[in-house]
Length: 204
Image 1 (cartoon, rainbow, N blue to C red):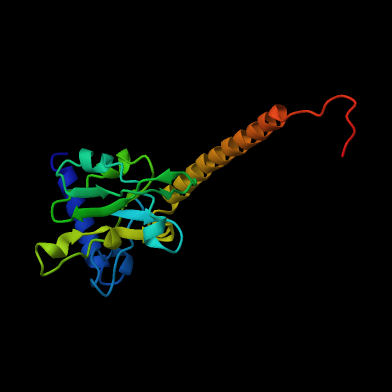
Image 2 (tube, one colour):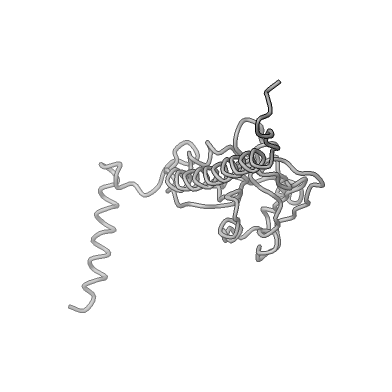
């Protein structure tokens, strides 16, 4: 019948309108900010930097490779490398960022920085209440403002964070196993190269 879909839509609207007076489940709005809808796990707004442990500066996963800076379409990421190195999650010495800024006023939340990061160091936050009366400096976030613990990452994206942690733990185990094998091989080589006592010589 011509217009059947329109009538069905109007009937559904009328049912929700009338039902909202007697059923909370049919309410389509909430009294924000006192009431808030839970955000889905896949929601994303702006990037943040993940760190492990209690010290945000020492635990930053970022190694200042600058891939995210180069791949960012609006060019809102600015990174400066350190002159020295520090151990990463696997114990390998890495360069770290002395400066890591993101201009939130320019960021388009495309998530390309997350996808290209090989160190699982940058992820997408679901925080959206970032309004400020400072239109310039207030929306330029530095590495301290961007740094959030791995526990926070698990809280907002539990499924993804669990997969990332499992992958990082596997990589760390491989690095440690390789280091142990190298140490055993070095010890065996040193033992083989050690001078042997002459035959018939009496021990001192």
